[in-house]
Length: 287
Image 1 (tube, one colour):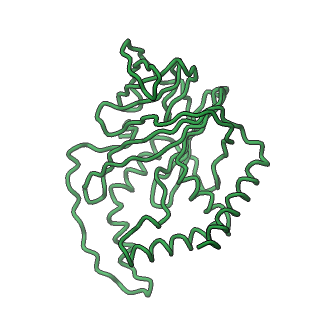
Image 2 (spheres, helix red, strand yellow; image 1 turned 120 degrees about the vertical axis):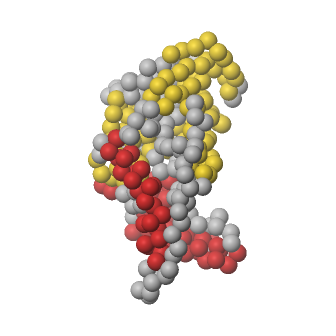
Image 3 (cartoon, rainbow, N blue to C red; image 1 turned 180 degrees about the vertical axis):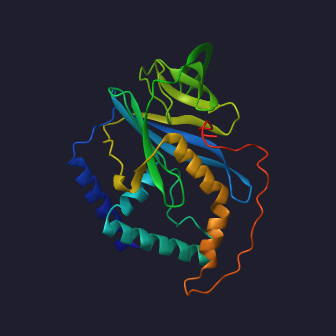
């Protein structure tokens, strides 16, 4: 166990040192958010998920990402990291088979990375769109037409003002504070005269809530293994992911049905339940 921990620490320090040599930009502010969302499994069951995300930002650029996902991607970016990931996965699966505890299985909680550049007025999104497929696209972020209201509420001790906007198929309500005059926020949301600390869309399927703010000088590392991401159109990427989600049960059965010894395992087909709640992605205008 100590050997594995030492190897992990050495790997992360080496990775950080290599990234630091590239003179990556540093953040002035670190904001942690809880991303609350409803997720439709391939059997039709609706899961409620809460995923931790981090926003790193300075006056010119920002990075919104999940730490566990970046950790997994950092391991996957080097041969030694992939070997360690395999060992951690094997140990976690072994623990699960023996005790039913799956906490040791390394996994990501949220695959997307959002990079914003104010000088270029662009948002670049990296995300998954299938089982192993990854894609990215760049778009202008000045297209969110916010309507600032007169309602106020307190979030993390900051007085916030309400604002609403229709964006890519959903109606959003955001709460921003002018006490932090940074035109930033979670996910793609930005463009207000202050930091967005809370945002939710009206169906209740997706929301972001800040749960911590601190000053920082953390580096905003670029994405690992960028070559693994295909350049795509946003709507085409969402359509591809919807197609995968609609057929993921059949794909999983096909994979599981082929045993490692080339034997065939009979996996019964599960008929999906009707999506009565109309669960969908953060953006719905791809339909």
